[in-house]
Length: 435
Image (cartoon, rainbow, N blue to C red; front, side):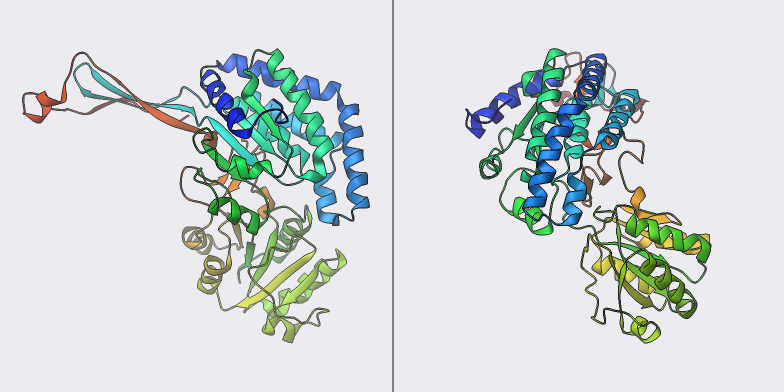
């Protein structure tokens, strides 16, 4: 659906009507549409490549920072990755029409709790064309309509991806409003006012941008502002295991929100561990910014004090020596963004305490923070990562894009009979299963 000829309010009202049709689509029709979309994208991979090369040239001309350029690139390998995600989505069980609860309140009075789509979801995301495909596919699989606004740096790539996905979806008898692309940044302001038509907003961008969205709309907002992730190297860590994990968490994809930004080192191993850490990181072009104790042990190129609230999204990492587990937990809960935090230790009790007390969406032992991803969790893909505690938390896949409704089946019952004591409830669970 184009936004060029209609007002945003009219567009979102039409999408809202289509969302009711989306909610009734069968699993088979949604999966068939996903298959058609996957085939359409692959058949037109050359068109996608040409559009992406144009975006990359414009980005280089405008001196876009290297981390954003890396996100912007959408080559054949990235296309294959997102198509693998679509295949995975198709194979997943249907998130809709699942019975979460079935309870007999009284004879011939039965309550059911059934999963259903959220409705209309607006997603504002950064310059990552692969995110457009992932979000569109997840929303289709979960029976939601999606309104997308991508970064201007990826305008040509986003446009061709949207056109191909929309064409394949409509040809598969999916309602026209299942996917809409907004290309004008000014239209975001109008979008924020459409609380009667849009059920959920998911912003993916800088801290200031996400905060702006939250403060300027009545629409519920889900997502995260920062990705300040930590790794705590405990006194019982296996150094041979720890070092590759840290390297992967920092450098595997340095601009990702699940990249480690702060290392906390147990003071009892600092003298032995820090030189090995420095050697490994500097060989891989990672600059260390250490606390006063760290600087006393190492010769660092940067002698500034670390800002532990910084999401570098670059080859830079903060290092702090802590007195032990409780100090590490306190630091993470105070400075962290409640995204993903990890402990490296061979002591299961220490790991258990860390995972219990660290207040983050993801808590790990002995593995890279880069695993915090919907595809790697087997969700098919994700629309983003939520650090909030309501509705969905962590990588938001299919389960996070559905809600539920209660269905009550009666046979002439009225509340007065129960209020006056003529009848009484006997509450008996018939069946209960998770989707």
